[in-house]
Amino acid sequence: MNQKIIKEFVEKGANLEHDRWARWQSWCHKILRGSCPSPKLERVLKHWDRQIATPYSELSEQEKESDRKETRDYIPLLEKALKDQREEIWKWSINNYDRFMEEVWCSYRGKKSFGELFEEEYEKSTKPS
Image 1: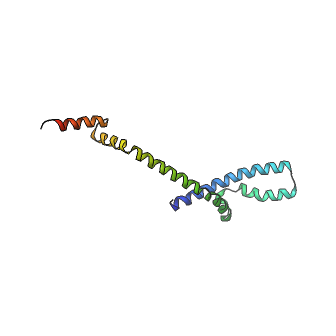
Image 2: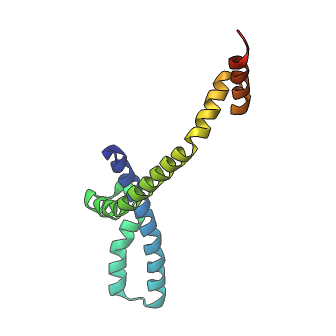
Image 3: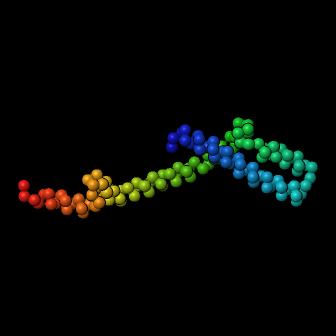
């Protein structure tokens, strides 16, 4: 896969990953604060609250790299899906090549079907010169 495309995928995916993580952590913090509040827990949660509230674009490079790493785990799945899709398209094109070429040829010659084209060519070939 093209390295530029991979880099773009990783960066956009890392942004999505950070948003997903932030939503999950916000929910977890809400549950923890409601079920077992304590000053010690609050100190720990406040540390993570800052990162939850920070948009991906404003994270440190180290924090961004953590999200990028999570996104890179999806690349093998994406590559397999693209490979499977290419194979499916290839099989379809092999199985439909004759019909496709017939349509192209008939369209080029201004006919609706191969049968119509065949009849015209047959008549030409059987007419006495």
